Image 1 (spheres, helix red, strand yellow):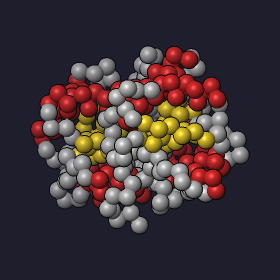
Image 2 (tube, one colour):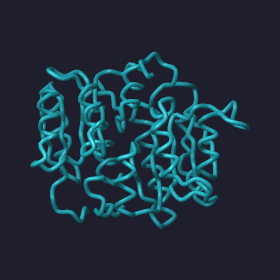
Image 3 (cartoon, rainbow over the protein chains, first blue to last red):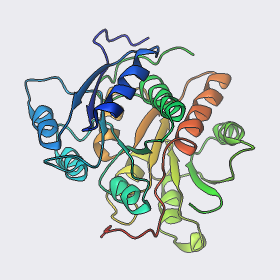
Image 4 (cartoon, chains in turn brown, cyan):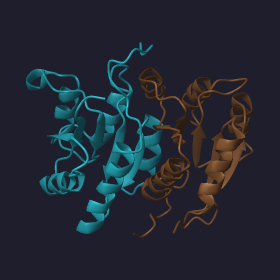
Amino acid sequence: MFTDMRDIEILMVEDDPADAELVREAFKRFDVAPRLDVIDDGQKALDRLRDAKRVEPDLILLDLNLPKLDGRQVLRAIKADRRLRKIPTVVLTTSSADADVLQAYSDGANCFLTKPLGLDEFFHMTKALERFWLQEARLPTRPTASRRPT
Amino acid sequence: MSASIEILLVEDDPGDVDLTREALKDAKLALTLNVVGDGEQALAYLRRERRYAHAARPDLIILDFNLPRKDGREVLAEVKGDAALKSIPIVVVTSSDAEADILRSYDLGANCYVTKPLGLEQFLQVVREIKDFWLTIVRLPVPGSPSTLL
């Protein structure tokens, strides 16, 4: 278990309430129940991230198609920001276009996930995301947190 | 994606190479594991220099930090600073538990950071987790797809 007692916080930038709800429901079932903060437009997400008074999220889930400020622009802004760039940013989008995938990695996305269509597949993907990012990977926001024993 | 997933493992410890090869074995995945034992070879491989003129572009790099000749941290910085290579995901797998290494890795653009556990079985499990997430859930970039890379 994480030695840092503060809840894991995930910022999800997603304008589709149904997708946000699916992820929220999926996370409730997991061992590491993270706090999920959902923001539905790119500009608001960037404003929240740039607010130095607020604690940085441990992980960002970023949709590409967003109102106000596109997810691609949000990604570039995060990765160009000295304070924010270390935060793992997982692109989670309906797109599976090769050009979108390559561009996202070139812009510094930590990984790219395509939203599956089926409900079961969506849960499976969310579980895999939780298992890898919250249990295996070391997070820059908690560099001293020990890995969960297997 | 091409028929086979190309992985470049940058690792100087033959024992860890064998364990990684074992853990990546998967009847359902066609993958090719290429191994280089130091940082200079890793960069020569990626830039297709000298004997690596015909090397395939890796879909994923698994990078150790403590390497002879050129350190893994320098390899990470050079790859992520190179417009032609930066889109290749790099999973850092190292015995270093140092807070500075974790923070600096994400700052330099590492896609994720995983600590090598001490036990044999635990090490195999970590590599399997990397395989299960990065090779079956994540969308990896497809080189040569149309994009505005440069």
